[in-house]
Length: 236
Image (cartoon, rainbow, N blue to C red; front, side, top):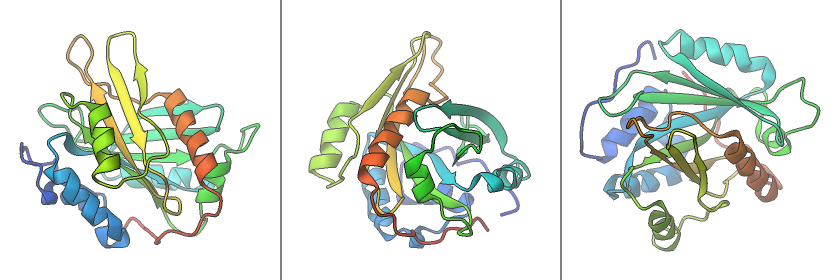
């Protein structure tokens, strides 16, 4: 993947719109057979807007290699969020922009710290050295005008998704809000749904909340007992 092109401006959430993001990041949907059906459901839902981000995991020694790979391809550092209960650095890199969103593509990296005083057990169990850059999760962006609680119930009762968290929420001092929920992992892979509600200036919440991330890892800690190696995913 030598270059990154901005997402096409479109109000139609067809299957190819979601698939294009995955392919631009250098992944194959064939590595995750169940993802195909989920994307079909998301593309038909008026509540799902786009793919918000894709997050990878890797050993601490591969951190700089991962960063260099994406920076060389035109991504820029968006932010780093540190968690304490489950120590790790959560890094976001972004590329491009759309008329109503501050980026067209976001790639994340969650990586443990060699200087942490305690272990992040679910992260340690999930990372498989030598497996390349492992895709940990894909996040789908929920429309700002959607009722997240109603969508959560629909996805649970009609789509058949099994969640490991309820809807988790964060509100900042400028009036912006962040709502997230996460499916139960299959191996070490899971799905996220995220809604970024704008602040008083109309700007969408563009970051993440460390407390929500810690809550995610607490849920992962409860659900991950035996991790089987997921399909190997390498960035070309």
